[in-house]
Image 1: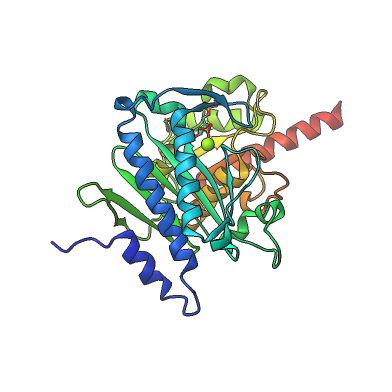
Image 2: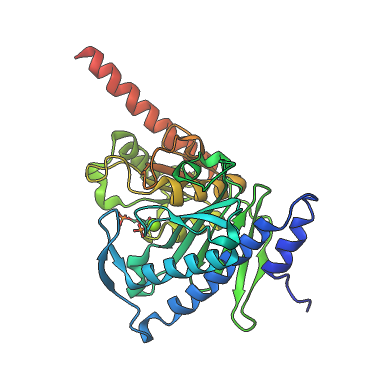
Length: 344
Ligand code: AHM
Ligand code: MG
């Protein structure tokens, strides 16, 4: 049997599509792959190494940091710093941007935004977690890059992807020319191309939302959930409900089987919970490149203005037809509210 193509080989091959490319983006992607392998090793043996549980600190969002959150963050910082292609890292785990422009990389062109270990509260119970990453070209042309270089719209991403540390470990990424998935072969320690040209099904039969917060959801979301639960042979309803609590796991399942993932505004999280820069924009880029759709219930996620590093947004993402349907319910609810307002 022919040996599957490794991530490194694939990246080099793709670089040939851009004759004037100097290989910087390729090297950056390679650095991310290396850090992901190290994180994978620790995630796999977390129970043996006193790496489970809380670290006793909180991040900027006031969430308790897990030991592996901190470890993963350090691994990505180290890999990107020594790689020299990234001038600024923006991370869920750091309140401020992390400047990586040492002497070696004074001219580094790229900005990386990262959630080093998404869904990390799932580690202690052996449920899948993941890394989300997003790459931008720096916009400023002189001096040191600044926060303004980070606060770019999602449409400016040059690459994005995720790593899922699951029953097997996969790295899935896009550079805007489709989506490819690589499975880590532990026997050779390489990510190997296993899912070329990934496409998300146009529709599906699984909806994914934390229904425990139902009472706090906007009316449009409540109505869409009821729609999912109604019997209708033609559209294969009622749909199944699946919610892992790791966005990457829920979205990776949607990529393969089709489905919708929603994290709307709630009473506790009036701006939504998930972060635009290092969670929603990168996942939206991947899902759109696979043929899916990602909005805040109305507007395209990748066209939202980015005003701050840890900005949050509601998100409706997954199979195109399912997201469009949920948006219909959102729009209807707004219209109803407006007409009631006018009547009142
Ligand atoms: P995290 O970045 O702190 O791990 O939080 C993000 C996670 C997502 O992976 C997941 O979809 C969501 O938070 C779950 O939140 P909730 O428990 O409120 O449903
Ligand atoms: Mg996260």
